[in-house]
Image (tube, rainbow, N blue to C red):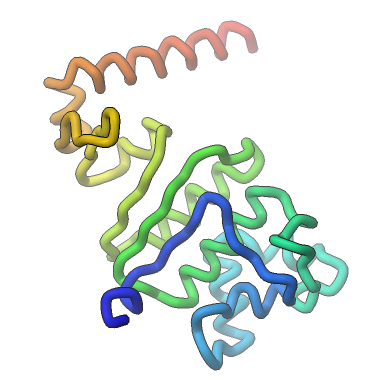
Length: 175
């Protein structure tokens, strides 16, 4: 219980309840006040879309948040993590929609500031902002180091970076 109270998790497939937006953000922290809930939503870049909902923070979410986009559900999960203010965070980050990606990444940077954060991602740009990277292959650690260290010595990391550059170059040529 002691360790669990120190860990915040932002799941890729966010679990939301058939309750209000306010209750979903405050889940896990008893007696969270309205100011605290709104501050967490703003920090998670969720306040703007919440304010546009029919009843704002009092909007009742559908089953598993089905009336929200994946990015909106993810931002509510980030708001929930903000309100808990856990010193250790676990955050799988994959499959974000383009519209939400920047808002979510900005919110994640704020959330992770000053905390121990385990970020699970295929996004090299996001991984490059980490202090330390563990590269996994078949469930085992294949290599590890700082982004600069891996770029200098890891053939697999260099290959991933090269592939990413080729994809970006091709995308720029199409546009």
